[in-house]
Image 1 (cartoon, rainbow, N blue to C red):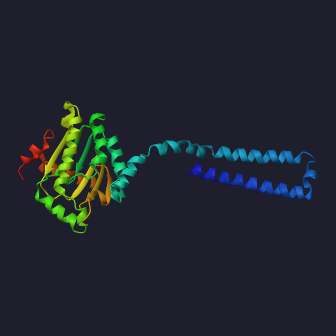
Image 2 (image 1 turned 60 degrees about the vertical axis):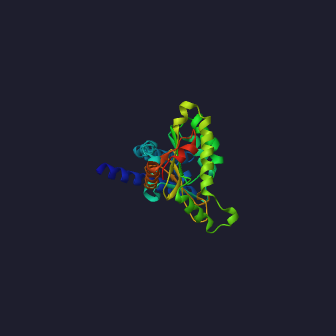
Image 3 (image 1 turned 45 degrees about the horizontal axis):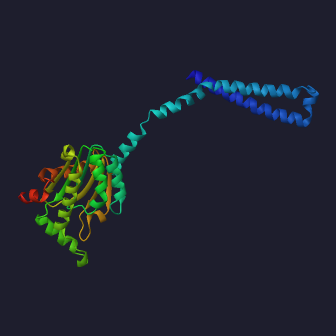
Length: 282
């Protein structure tokens, strides 16, 4: 503490001397005193004096300037990604973006980057045609560990309820036949199944459930797109909540719903989905 005070006073004295010397030299030069005191040699000497004072001041500051050498090291110790993840979890529960409707390109990108799991929970998959290629590549080329598809049982009473919900505010000409749509999704999945090498088919798992789903979920590893089943509107045309992280509050909640429906679902043999579904008791 005492050495710091001495240094502080020395710095202030040096600065005062520098300022005073500069002003004194300027006044002396204007009055012509420099030439009288030391003709021809005063200015260089005074300049040298001022430079020496500046040098002394900088030497006193060397220790403080050394602190700057450690700034980068201190910053590098900060885990920026971890801090961002913590703030995202605390303030947004894992939600990173809200889309007006299902972003096909975004989810396709998620699927293309997945290595562990791709999962879809829907009544049926209206955009399966757009995801067809990405799912095939995930199975055959990227060898994703498993792909789980959950669809509504085509004969479930919920199918009729969803028909009514979609018909409420829609033109009858635009009515969706939920049962036929589920069957179409199963047919496309069967075609994907048949193109996969026999030893890899086990990684494509499809189940049907007989329950009222609360949300539609599209998952690729730690990325989720979640929407609701609104009246008069397909889930993929509804607002989509994008969640990043299965360990976030929103991610955990969605994952629990997905796992719960998977547990109550019944496995479909894609080798002959029609015969398989017909043997499942509701």
